[in-house]
Length: 285
Image (cartoon, rainbow, N blue to C red; front, side, top):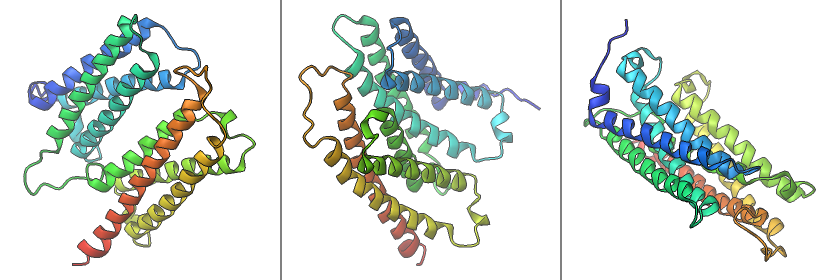
């Protein structure tokens, strides 16, 4: 039986979600009215981010308002906290990306969308803070824990790498193809770890799942470390930025991939160190 719960819209978290829904709608409406940018993965990523955040925030509001969320077969608080953190990261990325690539002094709609996007980031960051303020002693799920947050960050950075990749960048180069294979494999396994951990399916493994994750983290960190060296070596060595390179220059995408690769190797290294500390030091006591 569906029971309406008005507190879902009047409590602080509900108000923040309502505002985030409104402002994400304003963002993608302004950008859509400004026109489509042909063959731009960054433009597509920005539009996807605003539409994704709008849809899921509205869905969360509806499920909590109708109390349907209480009947779902997973930890609702864990899911909403993880979504708020993910939406914060996504809005932060597009708030930087969109004004850099698509805003000019004579573009009022693009400027407005950029400003509103920063407002969206502020609301999602506030939601993440509010949803993590649990009563003392209340356990958080995997997604809202530090290992879960780092796993989502690893997958998120991989998505930004995929957004910047083009076939012409790595076709015919075994070294760059190895880097792309690293990005794909680590992304797939990160998603699998998230699904198995969040779905509480790890207990079905006949061996310790946490130690398996540590092995994966070590391998992923080493693989990303090789990509950190190989990608700029093969893609940027002897390849200077063209003089006619604009905001959507292919050379800039090579730099974006390099930067995101460096960030991800740092995250994987921290994830590995924390997992080892958690499993072999903290839980062994």
